[in-house]
Structures are given as structure tokens and as C-alpha cells.
Amino acid sequence: MDSSPFAPTFGSWPPVLAGRSDLEDELRIALSSGTRHEWYTTLLVGSRGTGKTVALSLAMDLAAELGFHTIYELAHPQLIERLTAHLLQIEGKPARRRKKVSATVGFPGMASVTAESESGAEPDRSLQFRSVLESTVKRTVDAGSTGVLIAVDEIHDIELADLAILGGALQIVSRMGGHPAAFVGAGLPKIDQRVLDSTGTTFLERCARYDTGLLRRNQTRQAMEEPFVAANLEYSQAGMNRGIEASAGHPFAIQSIGHHVWALHSDASKKIAASTFDKAIETAIASMGRQVAQPVWKRLSDLDQRFLCAMAAYPDDGVPVAHIAEFVQRNAKWVSRYRDRLIKASVIQQAGRGLVSFSHPAFKSWIRDNVEAQAFGSVQSYS
Ligand SMILES: Nc1ncnc2c1ncn2[C@@H]1O[C@H](COP(=O)(O)OP(=O)(O)OP(=O)(O)O)[C@@H](O)[C@H]1O
Ligand SMILES: [Mg+2]
Image 1 (cartoon, helix red, strand yellow):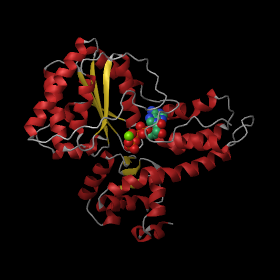
Image 2: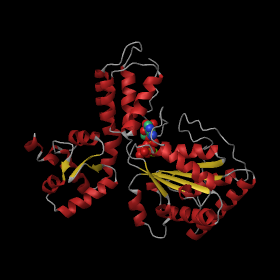
Image 3: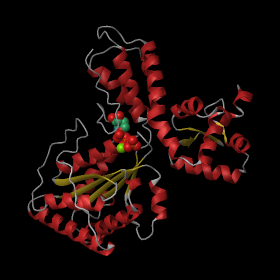
Image 4: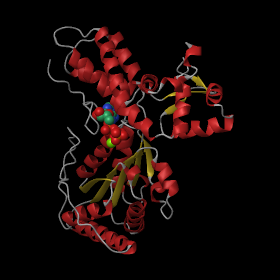
């Protein structure tokens, strides 16, 4: 068979982009209508592998199509210096309108720019950045561009001083000054904590917010099924349904399951059997464990982890909060605080009255397979 069209790699464009038409509509209206529109500065938030980078790329494509210059950076140290270098590069040049054709998330035109490190006091950095932003935007508009879109990925890692400078500049140049500098940031839900810790910047709180989250069932079906239909491949409907179910609407899981089904099926003239889907699901869930659950787990506190162990120890998907309280030997108030934290981080979700479940089943199997057995003290009593 031809090589798989699925894209089980972080940051790569999927064969079918599902469930983002609402975001696309909001951004198109905002970027066409001007700096006062709420979505002119947007924050994309979601847990690992839910499609933030791809959505950021969608925003950049859209902006380029509307005549914006686009700048993409990761929120690593020296962000302001790197953004400044990008701005200086585009100053005075008209943006070339591009047709929106994202085959890969390549961030066109974004040759990496190495910036000289700035020394000097914070106020100087701030003033300098604001003035470069303002003059670049003005000149690029004079040269015929619509404006400049700044896209910042992994924004949960931003240094608070950089956030204050970036937010302050966008506030003054764009929101107050009316110069078309648009912004889209993308990051993990822990950005909320980061913003709470910061003083002096309400910039991110004022951005329109889009949760990438899990796709709905019809969107999941579209993302998983369409590449097979487009290639005229016949498949077991029961197997496809199990694939859709197992992905739980998680974008990375959809790509991974689709990819493994494709790779396992060698003869394009034959119908893809349900058992091929089952094998692919098993492989994909294991890889989700390594690539999604493990990195999330490592970033959680000991107490968050205990909470999740209590959930993994329970035999059913819906776990009563009373069971968690008993398992971790804490009161209801403690459990409800940690439940809220973990829901915010998109690790778990509400599953009915008094119940929670993992936002993706791969978390449960990964914890069961990888966390020390003693953490599951009471597993035995349930099985
Ligand atoms: N809307 C979508 N429909 C189908 N597949 C998608 C969609 N968005 C993203 N994907 C796929 O999901 C996977 C993860 O996408 P992406 O790298 O954008 O996630 P992310 O949230 O940025 O991840 P991370 O938290 O690691 O930065 C990729 O394989 C991508 O092709
Ligand atoms: Mg990403």
C-alpha cells in the first residue's frame, strides 16, 4: 500500500483537519475586522497532543491569506530578542498574500533568526520592543500589508518578564493604538497558573480563548475515516467504530490509530479487517502512553499523581470521588480541589454526578503499566 497519509507526529498537519471550522471563522472575522475585535489576540489552550501547534499554523495560514506578515516563535528564553529580529527583517516589506495550502506545518518564511542578546535594564527592553513593533507594523502597512501576526507556541514556558513586555507592547500598539499587530499564543493549561503567578500583565487573560480539547464523535469519525475513503480502501465498519471509540477524540490518538491501521494492512485490494483495527489500537495506545501520558505525568505534583493512582486503581472508567477520598485518605474538600486542578489540566474530566474519568483511556493503562505497584495498594481488592 502507499505510505500512510496520517500524521502521528507532533506539529505535523493532519490529512483531515477536523473540528476547527469555528476557530477558523472567528479568526477570519477578527483578522478582517481589526484590532478591536476580541479574537484579534487569541490564546489556544489544550493538553498535550490536542492540536495546538496545528491550530496555530491554521491561524498563520489564514493571516497570510489575508495579507499579514506572520512571525512564529517558541516561548523559550530570549523570546523578545528573537521577535525583535523577525520584526526588523520584515520592516518595510509588503507581505505576499498566499493561498491557504498547509500540507505541513512548515511555518513558511520563518527561517530561524538568531538574535543578539540584549543587555541593559528591563524598561529599555520594553520600550525598544514596543517601538520596533510599532514602526514595523506602520511601515509594513504603508507598504501594502494588512498587518503583522505574532504567533507564539509553548507559551506556558514564557518568562514572565517577556510576557509583560510582549503583552504591554501589544496592548499599547494594537489594542490602544489601533496598529494591526495580531497575536495568537498556544500552550498547555498550566499557562493559567503561570498567569496567576505573574504580576503586571493581564494581557493573556484578555485574549479570546479557544480550548483545543477532544474532538466530538462526528469530527473524530471524519478525521479517521476520510483518508481511507479518499484512497478507496474498504474497511470493516465495526473495526472503524472501535478505532473511533479508542481514540476518545484525542487528535494525536486519531492520527496514531489511523497510521497503524494503514501500516498493518498490506494488500490494498482487500478489505481491512476488524482485527487490524484492534492491533493498531493496541500499538497506538502504547505509543500514546509514552508520548502523551508520560510527559504529562512527569509534570504533575506528587499529590496529583496520588489522585490519579486512586483513579487507575478503580475497575470502571467512571470513578466515584468518594473512592478517591478513601484511597488517598483526604477529605472531600481536598479531593474537590485536586479534581478541579486536574480537570483544568485536561487530564481528567467529569463523568456524571460524583464521578470522574481519565480524559483519555491511554492514561489509565499507562499508569497501571508503569507506576510502581505499591501505588496501587488497593488494586487487588477490586480485581
Ligand atoms: N483538528 C485536528 N484533526 C485531526 N488531527 C489533528 C488535528 N489537530 C492536530 N491533529 C494531529 O494531532 C497531533 C498533535 O497535534 P499538535 O502537535 O498540533 O498538538 P499540540 O497540542 O501542539 O501538542 P503538544 O502539546 O505536544 O505541543 C498531530 O499528529 C496532528 O496531525
Ligand atoms: Mg505543540
